[in-house]
Image 1 (cartoon, helix red, strand yellow):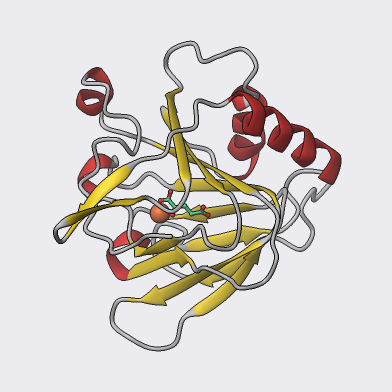
Image 2 (cartoon, rainbow, N blue to C red; image 1 turned 45 degrees about the horizontal axis):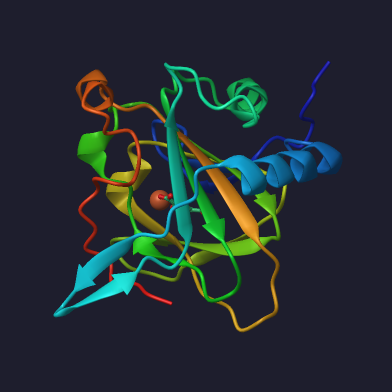
Length: 210
Ligand SMILES: O=C(O)CCC(=O)C(=O)O
Ligand SMILES: [Fe+2]
């Protein structure tokens, strides 16, 4: 039996699976329960980063956990990981959480830092809460593709795609509810051993603020 008769939407093609999107990987009720639990119990932090001569707030809240060590019991990371493994199997060992509080929260166009990722392994992103648009653009130029990331969806990005494409969540003037994204990655063991599993140590050059 084919459990995914429509297959994923293929947004970018490359030799490592490119960028693929499954709009309804998780039933709505489950996605809402996960949103509620992560919203309530993740260790959300507001970070500041230097931009020119001032400190700006990173325009979203962040949390991160290792998957090779116990995480707080209230967080349904094991269940979410199981769903992700069914679509995009990989030895994920780190998860980063983003909380977009409203339309002023965003992430600037970027590619995920390659030296913090194991080559050949994918990045898998689960969306929960309010839908938000993601833009994906080839570094070589051309128009961005927009994908409305629905709650319960999974987006897989190959390691190779981080070399060729950028992605971001633009701000929106629309009244939008809170969104949580759950991003599974495979980090090099040396980074995990140094506690470098989250976004905290990433040197960001992105110009972003609220
Ligand atoms: O929230 C999202 O969907 C994207 C997050 C992202 O690009 C990141 O954490 O690197
Ligand atoms: Fe990213």
